[in-house]
Image (cartoon, rainbow, N blue to C red; front, top):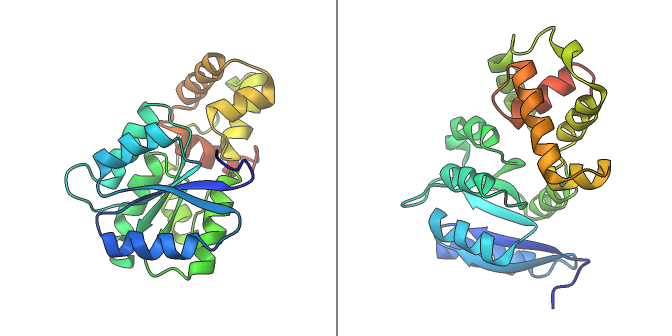
Length: 214
């Protein structure tokens, strides 16, 4: 039986030695439990659906279904796992697409082990891990989107938007506002339409830039 006080983590990486190293370190953390592994994106999606982990550590470059496509698939399936992308410094250009696809943040492959544990705890708590240069890149790409349209949002939509900016999933927003997930999805769709934005990441950045939420 799973310990409700521990963060359940799934490792998705095509290098067995990397998975073994991550598992070895994470297993000594009192509040983190590695519940499974996968060697490619397709297997990662299947294992995430089967195991329902709290956090997925997802490599970007893998044979077959890569990390970003696997992430998009999980979001299409409405899987509630928070995905932390693991990338190399030379793959920085993949970070923005990953965040657009719904990643909760990213870490570099040479991350200090203690920093990795902190990152897992942070995204599990609902935070989004963004380095300043990546946030700047995202904001510059979204500049102009939704400007001046915030006044068209209803009070409820502004509440939902604030929770999106806080990194909450639809399920968490539904629980916080005592709504059904279907109603929350409708509010999210309306927010994106009114602000002329493409996804939740853009909405979260718009909210932060305009003083709503996080």
